[in-house]
Amino acid sequence: LPVDLKHFLMSVGYLHQYEHISEKKPAKWGYAGVMCFSKVQATRIFKGIDHPELDIEGRALTLFFKDQAISGVYFPNSGKPGELMYMGKKILFMEEYDKFLEKIIPVGFPVLVGGDTNVARRIEDVFDRTDAPQNKQAPSCTVEEQKAFEKIVKNHCLKDQVERFQEKPKFTWFLNPSFRYQDKGMRVDHVLANRPMEKFIKYANTLECTYGSDHRPNLAILKTNTLDEIMKEHGNPHW
Image: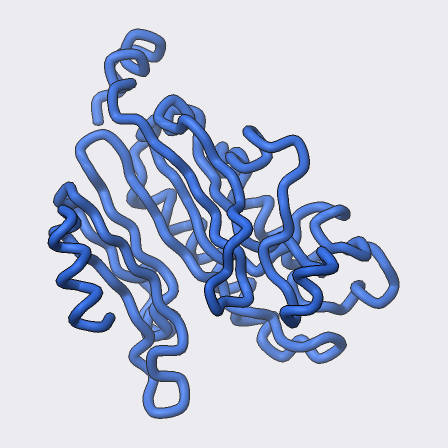
C-alpha cells in the first residue's frame, strides 16, 4: 500500500491495518491479497486458512472483534473457458476454507464473509445464464463450483446480504469495460452473514463505481448497538 495512502487512512482514524498478501515469487508475488482498515483493534487475527500450500497465495484474512468476526476471502479462479486447469485447487481451497471457519467460529457468533468468491451461484448471475451451453465449462459457472460454494453457505447458515436488501442485485465483474456499459457481466462477489450477524447489518448493495478495477465493489453498512438485542433474543451464547 502506498505510504501516502496509509498516512491518509491513519489521519481519518483508521489506525489498524491488516493484510495477507501472496508470497509467491517472482511470477505471482502480490497477485492475490486481502486487506482490512479498521478504527477498532482486532482481538484475534488469522492470516490464511491453516493450509501451508494454499496460504502462500494470500487469499484469506479473518479478524475477530469484540462482538463479531469479519472474514475477507479471494477464491482461486478455476481457469479458462473449456480449460479449467485450476479446478482441483479451487475446490480444495473452498473445502479447506469451510473447515477453517468451522474450527475458528464459535457456534452462534456473528460472522460476515465477503470478497471475490469467483462463483456465480444462480442461473441469473451471468448475463447469458449459467446454464447456457457456452457456460457449462466456463470458470465460475460449473456445477462443481456451485456445489462447493453452497456447502459453505449451508454449513455456516450464511445468507446473501445484497440479495436481502436489493430486489435485483447488480453484476460485479465484467470481461472488459464495454461489457460493463452493456450490463453484460457476472455476479461473483458476495457479502454473506449468519443470522446473528444480520442484526448488525443496516444495508448492503453493489456500487456502480469501479475506479480502474474490472469488479464493482460491494458495500455493507454495519451498526454496533445490537449486541443487547441479540442476547435478548438468543440468550447469552457463551462466546
